[in-house]
Amino acid sequence: MRYWYGVLLTASLLAACSQAPQGVTPQAVVTPEPSVVVTKTAMPTFKRVYRWTIQKKATDPGNGTLTLAAGQSYTVKYAVSLVGTPTGQDFKVEGEVRIQNTGDIPVVLQAPTDTLSTGENVALNCGVSFPYTLAEGASLTCSYSQTLPDGRARTNAVAVTWTSGEQSGTVTAQQGFTFTTPTQVVDGAVTVEDPSAMLTNAISGIDPQGVISQTYFFERLVRFDQCGTYQVENTATFTTNDTKTQGSASARVAVNVPCQGCTLTQGYWKTHSRYGPAPYDDTWAQIGEDTAFYLSGQSYHQVLWTSPSGGNAYYILAHQFIAAKLNLLNGAASTPTVDAALAWAASFFATYTPSTIPKSTASQAKGYAAILDDYNNGRVGPGHCSK
Image (cartoon, rainbow, N blue to C red; front, side, top):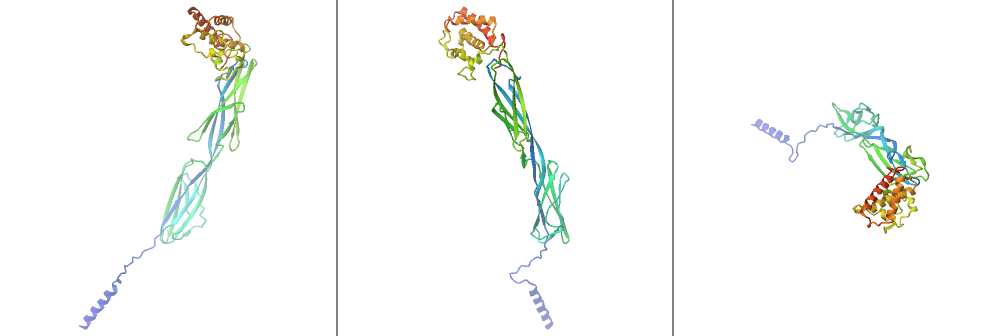
């Protein structure tokens, strides 16, 4: 009986010792694990350099030739076209590789390898020697700057191999990049000068490839008081904003001022009086815009601006008569037929008013108006001036 009691006592004591103290939870044993993360950046840089070309042409007159009366003014119009073509230079990619030990124990890093999708190997500057022990929670940053032969799009990939005890692994990261926005632009703008002409307008555009197209519009007033043949040459020059590179282009207009003169239409004389709207032609001074026109009760200028409503023969003839007189005063040669038409018209205006024309005479007036219209338009006589 004593022996049995002792066995029971011993078993009870052992059971009591094996139980955890009240309120205490058993803890599992955690084995430290390594963990490595790598990230990278890739920033492309390049320089865009523009090369410019220039062309110039006369848009009015489109054929590059003019026929003017002595003393006649003409506004020559030019278009100056420039094209800036870009070339990429100094291609480079820069960035960082960041290696982080996010585990609980140190790891040993081998030298990272960094390559581009086009085959180039990138040299990393990590500031340490490899193999390198990276403590838990620590990080290592490597930088790089790689020049490239061209502007193709690429992917930059890095691989990092690590070991920790009997464990090992390789982590990777990659970053793509394209050369779209230059970090430096050289000669991306120009100034254009044309000392002999006046700038009136300009337009500009750029295409998806970066090619810049610009057109500048200039005007120049030309006039020659003596008959002869003249060459009017105009030169435009551009200067780039950075390197101050220059280029120029010229356009030439041939001007003929015939000694027998040339004729202009009634539309020209109507708008080139001192009342405008076109530049003043001083031939008008030999008549006077405000001089009374025969029995019309109106001035020469007023008659020209009166529409021949209802086909009024008076005004139809008066418009061509006034234009022919101004053409003769401006030096245009006449013809016997034109002289006869002018003489008949002068007698007609000395006899009738716009409202007192017999029907038979009205028809005759329109016939002489047609003769003078042919003269004013250059179909007969010395020919028509440019206008």
